[in-house]
Image (cartoon, rainbow, N blue to C red):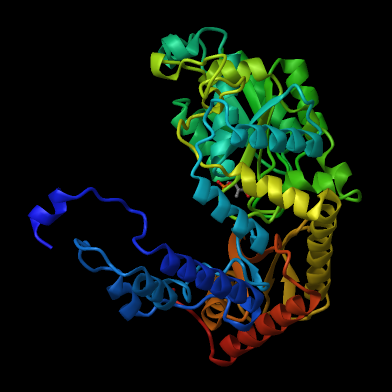
Length: 495
Ligand SMILES: *Cc1c(COP(=O)(O)O)cnc(C)c1O
């Protein structure tokens, strides 16, 4: 086609042949359903061949391609090499598994391509409904406000922004931190997720003023050390502003004593923020609920729905007790976004007034549909099931002479290692690292790692609705086998 041809007619990105696009869509849907149904038959993860990487470094497409062929490329290049977190034997980091119905909801949301920033459109009402359900599930009052965001990192950033602005004692949005007469200090345990420090840095507070307080043997924040740090900061003329409590730490699943943290915040006139990325959802399991006691006293709470609520990425939620504080931190209405009382620019709640994003996806739909599909009691049972599986795994570790537990298991996370008496600590650390990588490369089971008190730990974080007990039997077998092989090879590892 010549340049003249392009300019002589109007174009669109819609298909010229809707029937073949529809047929392709049906095929994709069938393929993906089969893929999910048979996920267990494939490796959890596999290394990416160089040839595949090379085919993802080609030149910019200038001319239209055939959707059919593009899909074939997806099947060859992308589909076989994902992260693997939807597999029943994936327990790395804290990752969710998603669901088939959640996937379909994402397709519907993408088709609508609605932007629930504000205005009079039902997607906003769906989000308000989901937020009300979250408040109910997590023990927050219905007058609280909230926002669905991309992940708990963003939820922490939003919550801590409100904490900083509401506690500053002056108009921080207008005058900036420059106007601050006192240094604002924030507190959390050394086990706190890095996203909290990132938020503090982004807020211009300085990582140094996030006081990382030591933990006790249960990996909970040491309350005496915390109170001492607050007192010292007051004496130094600083302004203790906020405590960040953990409901489920990333390393070991530890819960800080949230009720005591809430008490300290009340006494000291400080903001209480809880990072409950996955652990907050323990609230749904009757036997686990006592662990989250005190969480409902937080001024702000951040949690994910894509981890332990098993929804497809991305979705997380931040709740703020004072809707007024929340709105005051983010509301900004230029002329072109002025809220009307009628028409599309009507509607009471504009989510753009409660967060950073203006354009945002309709992620509420998959939450609304998923919560209706399964009901809250089933989510509670699955969370309990994962916790029971963690205990089951811990028992297997404890009864294996070659394995050693490295931390208590309060929730869903098991930290352990392969142990050999004849090896010194540095060699044992290297051996376990090599063991973990070999397991990943072999693709039968997948776990991650962390370091606890200087010791390299194998770490299984169980937020997977597809795992079965037998999967953990296999994990233990494989760890013992690969560990034994490394010993037989006379493992010393890289110095
Ligand atoms: C995963 C996690 C986060 C960050 O959440 P994202 O959804 O990955 O942004 C924060 N805190 C804890 C405890 C987490 O496990």
